Amino acid sequence: MKNRIIAFTSVIVVMTFLLSIYCQPVHAAGEVQIVSHSSFCNSINVFYVVGELENTGTVATEFTKVNATFYDSENQVIATSIGYSTLDVLLPGRKSDFAVLLTEDNGALDVHNYTLSVLWTEYSEDKPLGLEIVSSSDHIDALDYMHVTGEIKNTATDTATFVVVSVTFYDSNGTVIDRNWEYADPSDLAANQTATFDVELIYADASNVASYSITAESENYALVPEFPTMTTMLAALAFALVAAVIYKKKLTKL
Image (cartoon, rainbow, N blue to C red; front, side):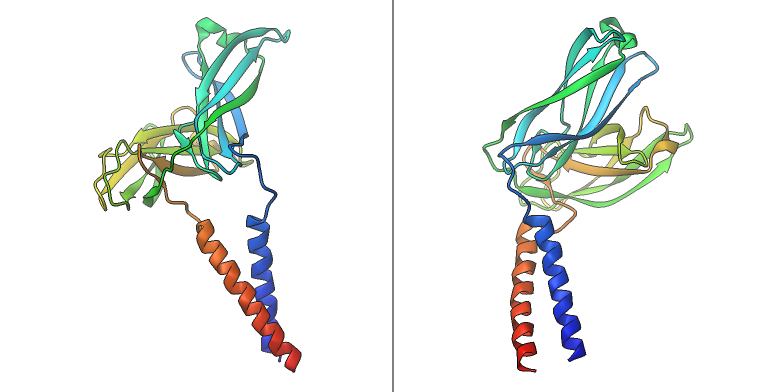
């Protein structure tokens, strides 16, 4: 009796967890939001705004653009500039880093604050999953630059062309402090072929990096997500519901 009650309780916990993840209010199609951002001026006086976008909608987007308006200390507009998400196609639920820059000639040294907005185009085609991060690690080189290295594999049936690996770096608060990307080596991968990647942290101090995330895409494939897909999770939910009914019937007979 006791074991059955524990089992039934476990099923309910699993169901609650799955529902909390996937039974959220439906968002408008193609809704992209800025998750976090920060700014800095590099050694050649270029002002950078770096951050992360998330597609919280139900449709993939492309040409996802961040518009930045820069102001001086008197709140007067200095300049405007644009940047794009590193991922060309942002699937629903996916994140991508971005960067917007302003040169010294355009007023980088006079920036006091800025505002950001996002524009995008809905991606009407399908971008299937076909890339997988096989392994990854990080290290500090002799010049105190941080590197994120690893291997990426083409798990699809066709050649993946122009494979790009992007790394987003966060501080202890989860705020983006830098980002960078590199092509895989080689950049074109035949089916089941594996390539290496080495993405270097350029501007932020490595000691300020608390964590990082890795994403990737090619011209024709998206990255396989780290967590189970919606289909897998829905199957688990269905199994949990059936198990709950069975246990409930058994308990009522006791």
